[in-house]
Amino acid sequence: MNNKGSNPSAGRQHNVRYPIFSPSAGPVKRKGWGCFAPRPVFVLPLFLLLPGCAVGPNYKRPNVAAPTVFRGPTETAQQASFADLPWWEIFHDETLTELVKTALSNNYDLTAAVARVEQANQVAAQARSQYFPTLGYSTYTSLGHNQFIYSPLNPPNGSQGFLLALARVSWEADLWGRVRRTNEAARAQYLATEEARRGVMLTLVGSVSQAYFELLGLRLQLDTAKESSQSFATTLTLVTQRVHEGIGNELQAARAESDLANASGSIPELERQIALKENQLSLLIGKNPGPIDTKPKYLGEVPPEIPAGLPSTLLERRPDVLAAEQAMRGANAQIGVAQAAYFPTIGLTTFFGKISSPLENLSLGRTNAWSIAANISGPVFTAGALTAQKRQAVAAWEQTKAQYMQTALSAFRDVSDALITREKLDAIRTEQAKAVQFNEDAVRLMSMRLTNGQVGNLEVLESKQRLYSAQLALNQTEINRRLIIVQLYKALGGGWNLTDEQWMAVNSQPGAQTPAPGQKP
Image 1 (cartoon, rainbow, N blue to C red):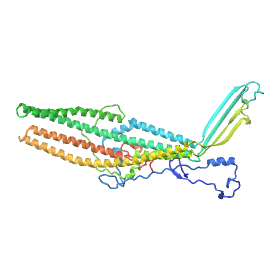
Image 2 (image 1 turned 90 degrees about the horizontal axis):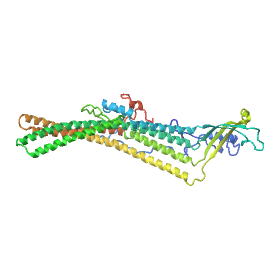
Image 3 (image 1 turned 180 degrees about the horizontal axis):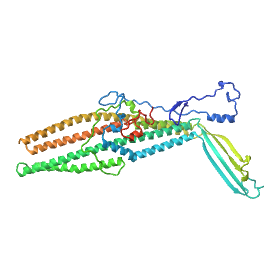
């Protein structure tokens, strides 16, 4: 047995020492009662009011083999974390900020998550009610002749009324901690749903940001596709003219027509993808499908430095890790609930009221009715049912423990993947920027040679086409650089120190590192 109880209102563990009755504590005045010699009728209520021990294991977080640093470009320990920033300070994009604010206010998935939290809160409130006595009442009124309360051999004259009015109180003594463990499990379920709600908020911010940047990337691709299509159309005109002049050949014309058809065909496909992406954003912000306005050819800035923080702090910040831990805590409490079923249940019941017939005797003292009773019930033989129930609880605990460990490992991997991807994308961007610069120089030189009559328009247009391809690749990398920042912010549990009000209010200052529900202060 464990001598640790839990305060259901605060959700914190307290060490409690319980008195142990020992024959050596004093002179024995009455056999079997040690130093106490009151009547059993008074000892029983006193015994039931004493705190009992909570059977089952007390919760202890399992050790997670967290790495000292995240695997990434700079494997150094960092106290600061990118997750400490509020979400609106990541990209400083007004359009994106307004979209996220609208999503946090209107998204139905978040509304459903809030409702789930309220359900879990009421389940916890229902569990807390078991600490207190239940009060009820019952009445029975009748009018008749020769009722069961009289002997049929000597019935009263005429009809008689009968009234039964009683108030009942019952209470279970939590000697073995069943009620406490039930409350511990219910509170853990509430905290798990609360963390899940915050996870939905973080996921929503990430989903809106990702869809927004993907929309920007598609619009940049569309602009490039239109410029490329115009370039291919000009090329086809020149090639056709050269064929008519006898300088070119039909193969060059066929290739020019194919290039133009491919470039023109990509335009409606990109327009389709843009419309679908706008619909996705509309769904996220809780609106009917419609267009989304963005700044033309604007991507915003990428944060230059992104500290990842310490891996051990990730266990205190990511909502999915915290939710998995609360599920594990609840499963641990259920072991105590199952173990408490082995022990007898002790309860008190009492009633007070009136039983009167005829009704005019209701005010007399002899119609008063009252009773105080104690009941004890427990299992004797259950054919292994209680053992199976406990083993189920232990197996559920092992399952939630494994899920928690897996969630923690996945969290470490998510951060490491994002850090490595960000580093490689920066390197890719550097090389692609060089390619764009070289192609721009080539176009400039070709234009100069065209002016001097050293080359024709066809060579200049071919240089421009290579420039468009290089620009398209660079634009996609720029989008990916922003998407990986979004993924890294989510992987680090971004906004963990924000209250709900600060999540909704842009430019508010984060609180003094207020721990989220379920975190240690």
